[in-house]
Image (cartoon, rainbow, N blue to C red; front, side, top):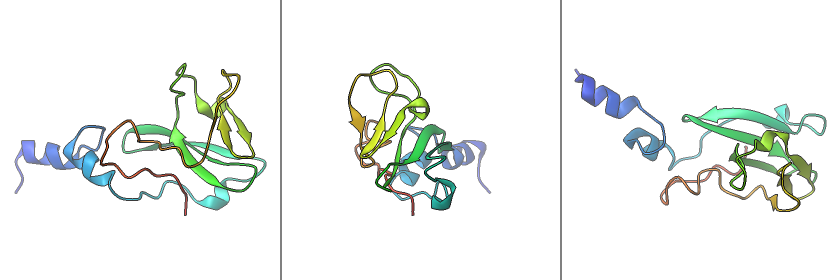
Length: 117
């Protein structure tokens, strides 16, 4: 039988928690690739307590990024899908490629979920 403290330690998955750090080391299924099409190339998802945007660029590559732009904090869901990634709607340039890490600033040990299988 787990104590309340042990249960909390094992079941919390947010950034900086032991359970969250463990689960971020592994790939997490976040969506079905067929849900993203040329007509609807973006989708918001919440994984392990973090808001993400998954997308399919014009070349057919899939990507997953933290929802909010690092520059102004604007939602990338409203960004522009281009041939090589997702561009924030509030900046003049700077397309984020599908290989940019959704969790790169969260933990140096975290596996970055950058593809949808």
